Image 1 (tube, rainbow, N blue to C red):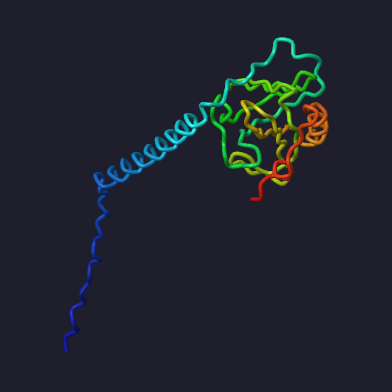
Image 2 (cartoon, rainbow, N blue to C red; image 1 turned 90 degrees about the vertical axis):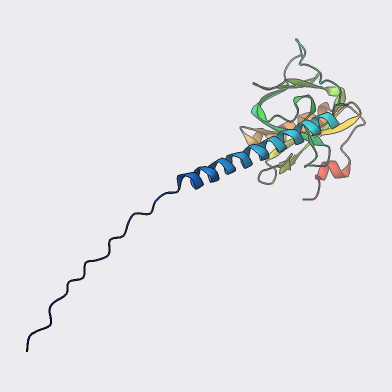
Length: 197
């Protein structure tokens, strides 16, 4: 009996998957257009908010001779909101730009010097007090991580958030700002305790 012939089966060759460059480029272009649209909508929202807040008067500039410094602080400016409303961001007059900040407190008021952004000055008569909080203008830090300064400008109460490079300084700043604040003006309960989150 003759043995059956051995049949050797050649493994099927698998061709490499062909990249569909047209489809891939289409997806990339679509994604880039989507990102550009989101960025444009955010920019329009910022401009719209700025126009709504255009009634806010120009901010006082830092005086040439503000007086003898009581306290100095280096840190970050995290934004400003309507007092007691940590998400109602104020973007008019450059208050919406986060930046590094150098703070200098004198008897005349609080000078806020911001490299790359507009400097401003809060006269002592406009100061309403200070407190520690954890969030402002959408920025959230650990409990008590932000120094919130409450002040009045153009008939509007404003909360501005700062964080020192040395957070241990915050307590000294609260005491000094409360002492410098205009007599007879104190934060109301909602502003002092912050808004419930």
